[in-house]
Image (cartoon, rainbow over all chains, first blue to last red; front, side):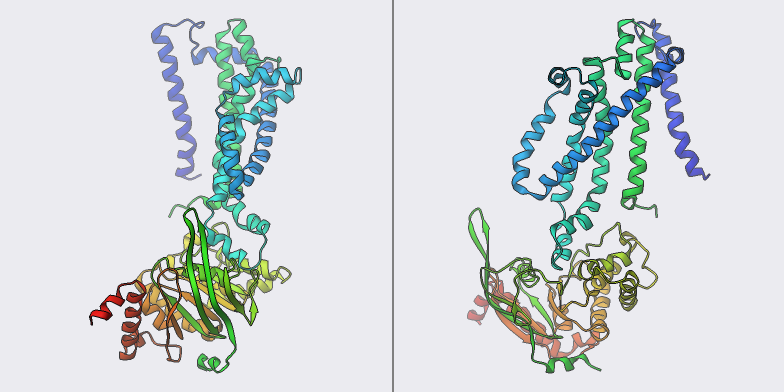
Length: 256
Length: 274
């Protein structure tokens, strides 16, 4: 392991330790009781006490988030392609999408919960999808519509079809933007899943664990759930980073 | 063998007859080409010069079959160009290499469209041979961003030639290079005409470039562009670079310079006062 690798692993760990230490110190200094603000040292016991619930609920949250995100990738890509390749549809769809994106999803949750009453899995996935597809569509649309005409012309002048140009040039060229958007979408999808779990609780997922902590006034549990969510978020984020390395690693400039 | 011999053949590879074209804009049609005519014999190198924005790039797109004129004819091998064809190679000022492909894979790209059934080894062999011709052997596995601007443009030239196109369309490919690299590439073009004969249409703003490279220089008028002046550069190739410092070349350059001023709408007045 080189010095550079070591530094890459150590620096975030040290940063996390410093943040936790400051947090601990702050709560201790203010003399806050746990029902006002929990300190990091209170979280571990809470987590350990409910570790099985954490494992079960984290899985519940995770799979719904991933399915919602997968749906967002598929639909977002298709929408982005439509908008990126057709000027007319771009003009037509943009205001609609922006408007839809501007609606706070917390207000959508009760509506969705009413329409598809009892379909908890579906509702959760739907909201995770709705909150996260927008950045993906926009990035694909921009990537496609800003393709320099020369790139198209080299293949079009040889009689290549639009599909070939898309497959050989436009799509790979858009990949870096796509992964940039996916990184944003990952965390958004998490917010979507938890919104449903908290606003329209169905007894599953980390959101519902948070909610039961709230009802029981178990503040350390609530904070432990938040930390667990952050950990899951980091996990998914780095999975996206790994995929980006594989499929769009060429976009990373090598240090010279 | 000097490639000038090819000129003996009178076959007109490209003929553009009375082509007019306008773009639709909000303010009404904007004419860019008006009654433009030119022809290029097989194996010839034709340079087109003219003021900025006079429709030179439109001309390349018409020949490539990416656009069709409002009126007039664009003939390739005596046949009207009705769609893009496999027999065109294009190189631009921006080398537009694909960063996710190696240099070798970039050069192969046109073959994937034109000859999808050609065995992979054969494609690679052809690409390697061309890369060696332009002095890029050893760089086949590099990414475009690892190459200098001049090297990228060399790779781009290889890509435009790899499928042995009937016509090579060069849209200011040397425009963004530094002066010395540009002269290197000019000389490379002469060498390539021996090793890999082609017919070329070069769009350029550089009069020296046109005189050094072309057999025929066409000056277009300002927009809407029409053929204003045609100059034959009757010097056999490959030409040494100091050909540009001959009295004859200086005379040609002066002549072209004067024609450009007329095209820009300035020279005319000067002529009257003279």
